[in-house]
Image 1 (cartoon, rainbow, N blue to C red):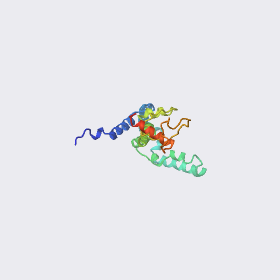
Image 2: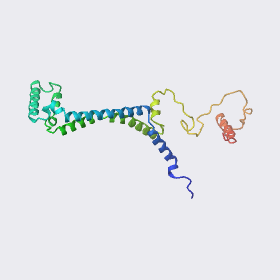
Image 3: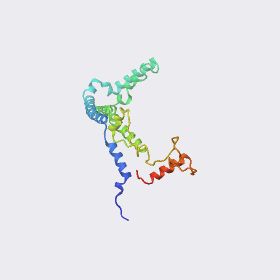
Image 4: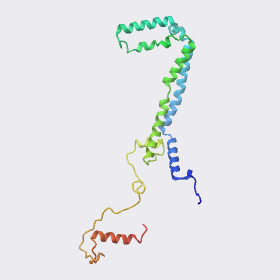
Length: 224
């Protein structure tokens, strides 16, 4: 026994490579999203750094109640009294109360407060959804297509499919299996005698059977 190819050269491995290459092929909208997300990251990091520096230096002087437990307690008590006087949901469903968050008000260290607020900015403004949405959609679409025998050559192909209104397919191997079979026979009725048409008068074949027999005789001598 002699091996002529390794497993990596098999048809199945070739299909797997095609699918992998298609998933790695970026769509124009994906490149745009990556560019925007990359530049947006610099803005987010700048905003987080500015938030950290502000609350580490000027913030405690401008808003001393954030770090002073006494002022924090009185401020929270005033908000709580206002909440009860207006009734539940009377001032934005707790939006004002959120501004006097317990942990933020009772933080006594400017460094911890500045760090927490900077991290909050990073978490809220992170453009991860922008950078992951398009690759995830391309990955899922190409995987589902591969499961159904449809190879999508890349994300750019998926993007162009949105504008397609006509699909042209190769006949053999795509829409058909290359295995022909007769589904029906329709004989043209003429006034020609049976002997003239090559169908013997003594033969018990029906006209349809006779046509099939003649077609088989012709087919046996050709490879088309």
